[in-house]
Image 1 (cartoon, rainbow, N blue to C red):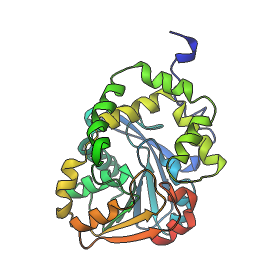
Image 2: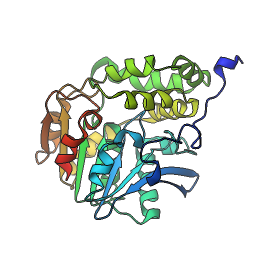
Image 3: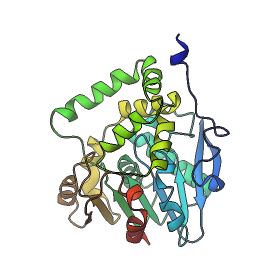
Image 4: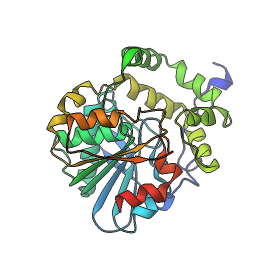
Length: 289
């Protein structure tokens, strides 16, 4: 194999040496998983869950704000960044929700407020429906709770499974991610404009073959159709914060969710994209504190 295509594995003592909120990081063993989790602050527990392809770094500026009022718990999801050891089952939506709840239980930090970004909101909704976590409120930041519509929805799973099944794909992707051009391009596609620090952190993740492989395996196992069918049974109050410039999750999906859950609150964040909490952490934090 070409030297260009060798594995590039995230190393906590190398890539993580200046990781955001590093002082709040710890590693938690639960089953085969070794979780990277950040815990900060005191007070009622607030669980923050990132979306596909990201990590706890996505909350780098939001976490310190929330920690003034809450004990904030922000993990890297299985297969992402510094959380290692996920099985295929733990990269499915039900398996990931179950694994997350087990880790939270091991820490003894049951959340009173659960906040999920994009696919992270689906993980939390699944856990609430399974009654493995029992927060007083669930908040979705540009929540991805429903299946993709149209031809994209039909092609997503087969394409993801094809890519995840080829061991060369993560290496090729990481090789093309050298530098920051690919990260910048992908981030622009979200409708958000984030700072240079944020772009650099995503670029580090994209250069990591283990992270890319984990993301592809998650995508290959991901299916929210059953979750969508169960949403009317969600007995936890739901708030949806929706960036009007989101180009990843259609902002109108929030209205389709509200049709299933008439009691859901929908608040629109004008001009913000899919990474609204990274663009305007103070504004988003204001909705949560």
